[in-house]
Amino acid sequence: MRVLVTTRGSAGHFGPLIPFADALRDAGDDVLVATTASTTERLREHGFSVRAYAEPPRAARAPFLERARGLEPAAANRVMVDLFAGVDGGAALPDLCAIVADWQPDLVLSEVAEFAGPLAAEQAGIPVAVVAITLGAGERAMIDAVTAALAPLRARLGLPDAPATQPAYLTLAPPLLDTPGAPHARRFRERPVPDAPLPGWWDGDDVPLVYLTLGTVAPQFGFFPGLYRAAIDALATLPVRVLVTTGRAHDPEDLGPLPARVHAERWVPQAAVMPHTAVMVCHGGFGTVRAGLAAGVPLAVLPLFADQPDNARRVVELGAGLAPADVSGLAPAVEALLGDPAYAAGAAAVAADQRALPVVDEAVALLRGLAAPLLAARR
Image (cartoon, rainbow, N blue to C red; front, side, top):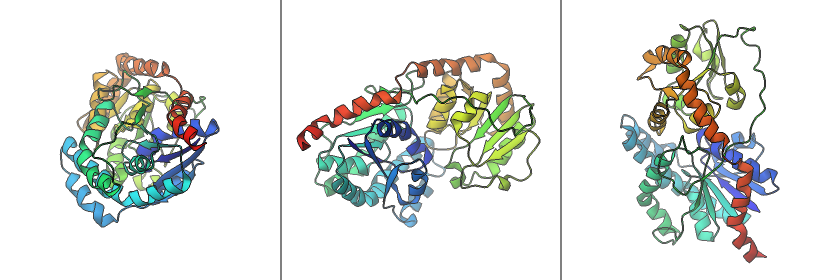
């Protein structure tokens, strides 16, 4: 089976697709990833064959980004959906239609915020599956909001106002963590990763480890290095070790001299850090929240934008973490998470729910079943 994976390419968008793409490739299917021109090299680092599709000029995107700043999250998210669907989707659509026509996939697998790939597939009569990049309520809101923005693109392709059938919907969110919005979701978990020791950055010091990560997008919105440094200084008042990741595009040297017990890296695989982590401080991105809770690690969440406030609320509702109002409340929050075992128990409950799900390898049969009619017709 030939599977075209379409994504916007950033870590929060491509990350949830990787386990499914790996499972398909390892099962012998042919996987091609289509992504924005600016993210092709990063995705090739994962070992995938990659083709680029066009991005709009910055001047076309800038008004949407400016309008979204300062809005409350729900309004900002609507602006971003208009950007992702109308502007970005319009720029990507010709290239994705050409890739579909040239490569002739049997299935298109997209993350839910990449809209042009499913349209190109629909026009070509190719089945589609989508992978969630946030919790169910956020996915539902995105799908509901995008109809108007996609109307001109659907008309351009001669498609009806709405697709005849909805694509299959896959998610890595366990039921306990998820929020209502995707009643027909098929749920899976990532493959387990063997535990491995961290490098000896702290010379045998074994006080609790706090992992500080604010994702890959936050620095692009001006949060680096200021917010990172403020969080480091707050955590340095506690008897903990701190591991900070800045993202591949930002130099830890820009954080300035670090306090004792604080170590910074551009990037460390989260799965490698989680077994050693007592508390994770994060921005509330879907992948980060899911990774922390899947490992039973309580979270201190400083939401910045997009779905992050919703994810932070869900963490608090589950008793699996805290969401301080700002960085001034970070040290007391981490102190509480370390001192009260109820938070670790809340995170452990999510981890147990996650472990009960089938591994992503079992999604291969589902995806092959979606492609089976087309494969039969092509024989």
